[in-house]
Image (cartoon, rainbow, N blue to C red; front, side, top):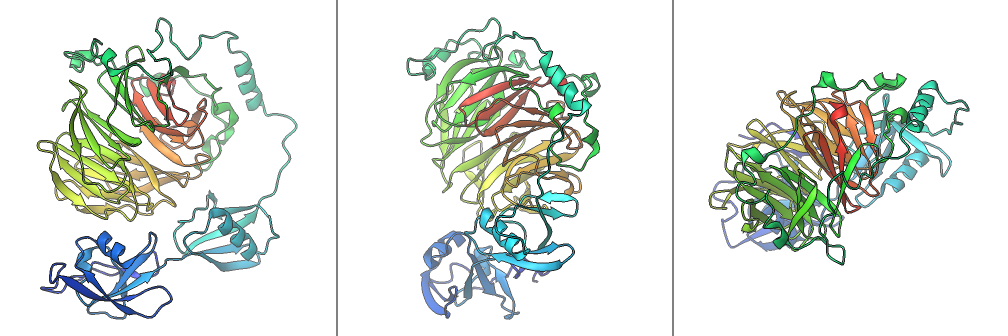
Amino acid sequence: ACRALRRGRFGCTTAQVPPALGLGPMAGESWRLLVQYPNREPVHRDVPVPQTLEDLRTVLGVERGQILLTKHEHYPDQQYIVEHLDQLRDGAFLRIHIPRRRIDISVPPDVKKKAVMWYPGATVEQIERAIAKAAGFPVGTQIELRDRDATVVLSTTIPNDTHLEVVPVVERRPQTAPSSRTQLGQQQQQQQPQQRRSPLTPVGSKASPVTADGRPGKMQTSLSHPSVLNGALSNSSVRRERSPQRGMSPTRPRSPAGNASVGSTTPAVHQSAPEEHCVHILSGHTGFIFCLCAVGDIIFTGSQDSNIIIWDLNNLQYIGTLPGHRGFVKCLHASFAKKILCSGAQDKTIRVWSLDSFSTQKTLLGHTGCVNAVLILESLDVIVSGADDRSIRVWNLSNYEVLASLEQAHLGGVFALDRFGSSVVSGARDRSLKVWDTASWHVQKTLHPPHYDGVMSIAVTSKHGKLYSGSRDRSIKEWDVPSLTNTMHALHVHGDWVQSLCMSISEDVLFSASRDSTVKVWDGDLQCQDVLQGHKAPVSALEAVGNRLFSASHDRTVRVWRIDQYG
């Protein structure tokens, strides 16, 4: 029986179409399809029987962003998005559709509802100009888009049929007299000590070994390091400190706007002075740093320079370098129990490293795009990976065979993976979050409503039964894990993409990193408590270890922040 029909986001209906009996993908050596290209009459195409939907798109010359539609066997007047190859058969009709976006705008009190449309390739600036023109404003007018009381950041992938109110931006003169709260913040900054120990090197620590050209020393220097040999990862060597209880945190002054709408701009009194909480800077990579991973008493960093560097968490010193990848290292995940580190890279491979010998145990091949996310599920003895090829793959840790290959898991590249309970959640370029059942690896639920742009990061707190998603639309969403429903949406939390999310060890504090070069601190109500400044380029990854937060940046450094004051 066919599933219930539902209205798709491109104005057509989507559903699983059952294949005709005996006419599956292997019914013959070739298929004869009736294909209608954009603005053309249908033509017959003879194509080899495709093994995957991507193969068929390639043969037909379907470009990225275009959609394949087909007719239902029993309802020829309805067209459906082709999501799986088993929806097609020999003799099927296919229409290549170029999806267009449409939103409705209102300009009180004159314009009640007016449509604005665009096709793939339009930029945000072009769309904003079209909206201003449709609203009747003069050329060059700066506008603000609102959804009720919230300000909306425009994206080229904003959902269809969104209704927004357009308001011209009016410049306001700054107040001549600063508020008492601002004066207090200025006095506190002026009262800080004139002389402070440099955050670059803690007291008693030595400089990291580097070569004459500024690169870290060779891996051989790490073989005698006491923290990585013969029990380096034993339980006794783990020296992580727990953050104090929430009630023990020092009281922080709140601004009068503390109860304002979610996503409001952080008051100046909450912005820490540059370097105020930074206690150390790790430097050694020669390219952007994309990822971080801590295990035992060491932390790994992956970079654009194709290398993974090992650092000692006890003294924050360099240990060694793991070469091997032939492209940017985009993701890392380690297992203390399995004694392995997994790394995914632009070279489309996943490398499994031994934490005992720091050598490659296995190189996993299969993805056809950059590997952006990797996750080790110790209880299931598997590795889960997501890549730009839109697929999610599940690998057996015992023999490194593929247990499941979820082709077209998303409609765009997979950027983030995390787990809660017996489920895995994935975030992707297509703006969506999907929850997967690890027993069958079928989609348990697609979370709704989606973000306005790609989902870059996911953070889970089992303590509070929540998960958070950070997106290129500059927002953070909070989801209730038991019901898988959206409970909070903080808009415009950063000035650019939200690239990474991380929970504190206590799971009471959320940290976010952005392409705007800042790290922000959030409480359980998604109210900003502080802004950590100091990076000179986009911040790409975060990792909390005890009472310290590590932030990796495109400025080729990792900053170490003291975070025990937040709880």
